[in-house]
Image 1 (tube, rainbow, N blue to C red):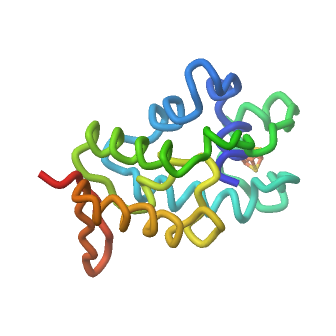
Image 2 (image 1 turned 45 degrees about the vertical axis):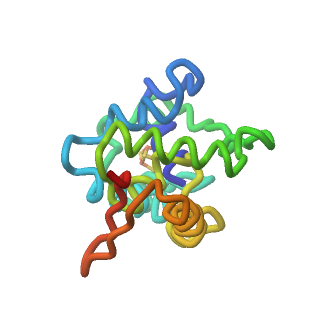
Length: 158
Ligand code: SF4
């Protein structure tokens, strides 16, 4: 759902291969507001911008500048299916390490959204899946996971 809303609203995201979806999705995320942004866009996807967008019925707040709403082109590709290697655990582990290397530390869901376009906290590829991946990386001595009262933060082990 996050993918659909992003794709419909931002013209820049239409060609997801060059640059890739992750790069564009990261670029449009407001600095320092990733957690709020991710929560808001997940809510938007759940309430308004699902497979069949409910722009007016749900009073979507993005209508005044949403590319799809303004052009009437609501087509959006399905969430990309990942070939077996693309979606492999090994590749996901590599992606986690690369992201933590770039950002220092990331909040759990923020990391999840950057690792997979189809990440959804309670979904098949959600927190449980990500925690399993991170537990393996922690066992290998690569990452530290810190469960705080409000957030779970993940960083590379120094
Ligand atoms: S205006 Fe419609 S298409 Fe655009 S983000 Fe909102 S619900 Fe989705």
